[in-house]
Length: 80
Image (cartoon, rainbow, N blue to C red):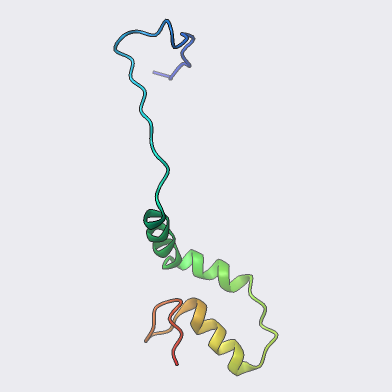
């Protein structure tokens, strides 16, 4: 059954009608969501696709490891 928009105003709504308010996420939730998204292959691919590779080979390798990670590191944890 398709959902029809309600034509009742708030003052004439049925007594059983409830409104649910969702508060905005806090900084920790934002951090967790972004951290999770950054581990996704699609995020890495989009980031690498938009990067400039005009440096030397060594600079580009360092840049790649910083953004995409390597077998030994997580993304964002550049090897030293």
